[in-house]
Amino acid sequence: MYSKNFETEAIRTQIERSEFLEHSSPLYLTSSFVFEDAEDMRASFAEEKERNIYSRFTNPNTSEFIEKICKMEGAEAGYAFATGMSAVFSTFAALLDSGDHIVSARSVFGSTHSLFTKFLPKWNITTSYFDVQKVEDIEGLIQPNTKILYAESPTNPAVDILDLEYLGKVAKKHNLLLVIDNCFATPYLQNPIKFGADLVIHSATKLIDGQGRVMGGVTVGGEDLIREIYLFSRNTGPALSPFNAWVLSKSLETLAVRVDKHCENALKVAEFLENHPKTKNVKYPFLKSHPQYAIAKKQMKLGGNVVAFEVEGGVAAGKKFLNSIKLCSLSANLGDTRTIVTHPASTTHAKLTEKDRQEVGITDGLVRVSVGLETIKDIIEDINQALG
Image 1 (cartoon, one colour):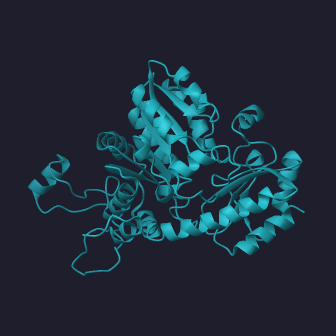
Image 2 (cartoon, rainbow, N blue to C red):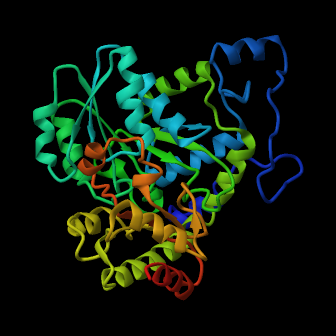
Image 3 (cartoon, rainbow, N blue to C red):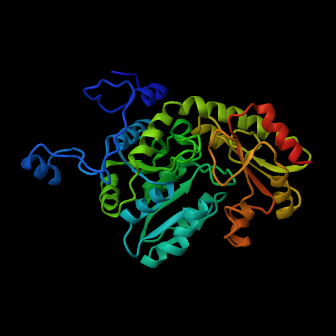
């Protein structure tokens, strides 16, 4: 029996070895599985026995990945998806009925915002937003038909922090499901279930993969809730591929050591930017100047790999900064080994109105840096020269 330490669980949790006694879990690139006889087939479809039937339902590689995330997050069960957004959509679609209501932090990923405002309303599912700086407003937004309280922490892209313990208490008081997107923190830095979350969602495409190779998503939490998500997903088909599951499971073996270095580099970048004459409003959870620094220290192990800051001059200055970058990458992704810089107002959040952007802290000059694993001196030199 292995210890319950994070790194050991991440490395040593694996599916049973085959007759070949492989050291590393093999790939199961098959669409379906065979049955021993007619009774085995009947019992499997009647769900009287747990076994692999079809890779849209389950696959050994997917099961291993889910088991690791569940252990890391302290969850009972989970389901893995093709992307992070398929995990978000499927979670809401499985648990909500027409007429239900969501209370959500206003600062959410752009595609999640589109889901709440453009697509869920088609099925008469509505959303009310609260300002992340005014969590005391949440209870005033709760309606008789409210079912889910939703938030990201840290938020994307402004790197705000929400008090998960407070959200957990509000959700419990009003009998709501608390769903937390834990993508920026990963299970290594933060475990929302400990603070009262019912479900935790990850875009595994980001730090969990960590090398910009594959896409994936996962939702973990209570067994009864995951059962509903599983039944919805089994019939609608957003499943993670076996190959991507294998890659992501292997990635988890190095998650701790990678994220430690990401956080070390990110703090140094944040400290550099905070003292730079051409930047303002530098935000990083483990900077003492961060408005929610005390909360971040309470619920996170380290501050993550994302730093946000503003450059003077609005959209034009943001674009000029990006055009001056030489080493770092210009990409809409994050959590890669490579440092990535993004100007949200002109790219990832450009479809939001200016009013909506301002309400979530996305100013015209805001820059998001996903700090990678390059030598820190090289990262800082590139950012410094790009600032002019």
